[in-house]
Structure formats: structure tokens, C-alpha cells
Image 1: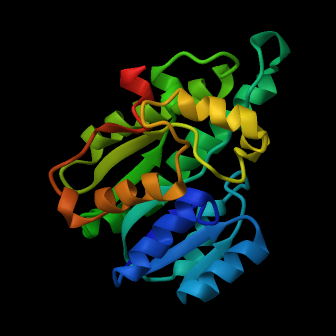
Image 2 (image 1 turned 180 degrees about the horizontal axis):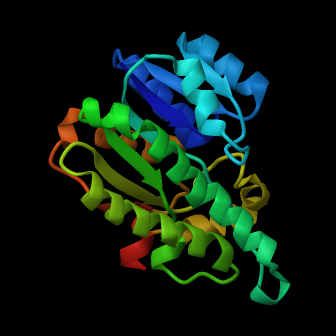
Length: 236
């Protein structure tokens, strides 16, 4: 039995995969960069699929690689940071963000629901602190991730009692997609100071909680949105 991790080469996804394997679990990794996903799979001795979640039928490709292997966990660690003032946005910006963050999540959930149901599985999705807090230039990503939070509670009701569904809403985390913000040391320091805990998040901060939500230790938790954000959503 395996846990399926999409966005497995990102800072959160890779950290989560390593934690699961270190605890004796098995994972199937999904990522779009062939070299990165291949290297991680070799490191963890795991199966993997190279694909882009924006491709048609990407979920079928994943399950063709999985074969008959049952899964009892799904983590959709895919995300984006699209920052623009509203006057500079286009319809296509919103459509791509919704396709990446929401629609593709529904595709893989639909495809994996039978296996998850049979194995009393858990689903973990990812949002952002920007849904709860209003940040300038965040209308694209906050709208898409707000939809993910709505999906979380809807599916938690629909899929209970056999599948649990929860969502983690991090604040800014060190990763490849946030490098364009954090590569400026002064900007990174300024953002860190906006958090009560005075630092930028690490992939392991969210992955530790995701690992808990995927495990039987959280068997009475579903339909929740959890802020893993250094206190920024509620204390500033």
C-alpha cells in the first residue's frame, strides 16, 4: 500500500516523501521534471510517474504506472505563486491557476477515490495564508486556493466516513517557486518579520503536519483547514 504524492519534487512534497519512507511507508511520486523525479525516486527506492498535472488524462497515466497497487493516502502538493495587480491580470491567469490548483486536484481525487475508500484513506490538499488574510496582488492565487478550501470541506462531507479530507494553508515557504521573492535578502528578512515566529517557513514545517494528517494518528480529523504559517493568519 502506498501514499500518492503529487508535486513530489517541491520543498513540501519531497520532504513529505522522505518522512513517509523514513517511517517505513511506501510512496508513489509524481512530478513534471524527469531528472528531479527520477533522482528522488532512486534516493527513496520508490515508484514514480513523470507528468504535468495540466496534461489531459494525467491521472490515468499515474494509475497505469501504479497498476493494482492500493493507495491509502493522497497529498496534492502542487501550487503556484501568481502575483499581479488586478489591472494587469487576464482571464487566462485565473484559468491556469484554477486548472493547476483546483481542477487537477479534482481529477486525481476522482481517479483515486475507489482505492482510498477501500483502504480508509486520507487526502491532504494545500491552500495559502492569503485566503484568510488580504494581501496586495494576490487575487489570482488566493481565489484559486480559496476554491481548494471549499473543495476540502465539500469532499470531507461527501466522502465520509471512508475518506478523510483536510487542507494545510502555509505562509510563504522556502521553495523553488518562491525563490523570485526570497532571493532578495532584505525582502526575505522583511517578510520573516511579518510572522510572529519571525522566520520564513521550511518545507518540513508543512510536511510534518501533512504526514500526521495522512496517518492513522489523525483518524478523527476531517474537513479542516489548518494554518501552518508562523502565526501570520491569526496573530498579526
